Length: 170
Image 1 (tube, rainbow, N blue to C red):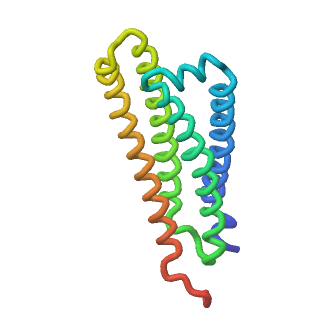
Image 2: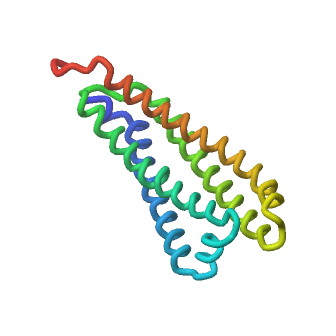
Image 3: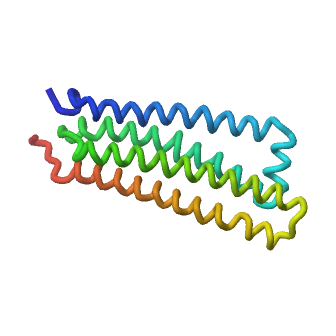
């Protein structure tokens, strides 16, 4: 029996990536339907200063949530079977999962906050004042985006270490 078939944490976290994928897809698809289906919402994101940041939040939840989580789950499942050895580090899988999710949620929250703040303020404030209001939100969003990048590097490192030295004879 192989470790990837018996390691409870490996199975749990691989499935959590799948569950996260499903949850983010439902959120992202619903968000898109609301933006497209509610005329006032569509107008806000299309025509208000920084309203398009709400669209960026939506695209990030779809790309980094739905798509990436599905890819991570699939790769975590397939690679150990392909190279016939356990994942290099279950601890790194866990760190990857939590860092990626925390970073993604932070990105989405701060993209959305910046979009709402900028869109609402643009009704009465000049563009330079709106920029000053939005700037701290985007800087904070950048910190969370860096967390997602670090999580992706952790994933890549874990996968490369798992595959390193692979041989058909094993």
